[in-house]
Length: 184
Image 1 (cartoon, one colour):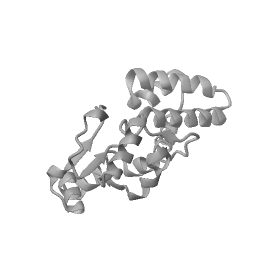
Image 2: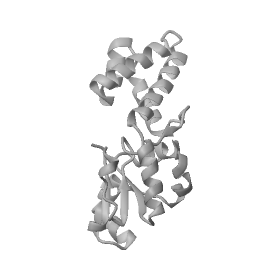
Image 3: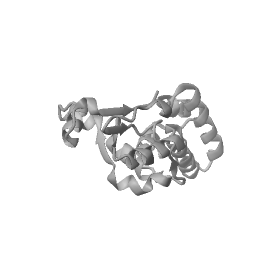
Image 4: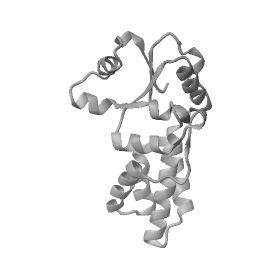
């Protein structure tokens, strides 16, 4: 993401959560850490450090969607634990705060200082995305956190609403007055 190329002539700026506010991997790897410790406790025979290291390698080389299947194949983890990982991914109580990218933190402060509107427009499970937002350390942008509205693409589309049109109407501007900042 190239923050330095963001035009500052718009009225409303929409930020995605994953890989825009913070690295998505910061969340996912903490979920894997929690799941690995859960599995070590459940089985008494699996090592949490071995599991989390393995999960991280699969995640980095193949992606999130392959992690459980590879765990199952390699460590013999039962299918019944898939639901635990999925539930944890949505509702995890993270051990560490998620840190905003420094340039995004500075951008939020700069936008509010210029009387711009800033909101979050995010894709994915709304409960999971809210959970991520809850665990963010906003740094200098913390004073503006309560002014951020959160919109969920999937929820708006489910209600047959076009997200950009809906948000423009909500803010009383035209769709051309919005600027979306999404992951590269």
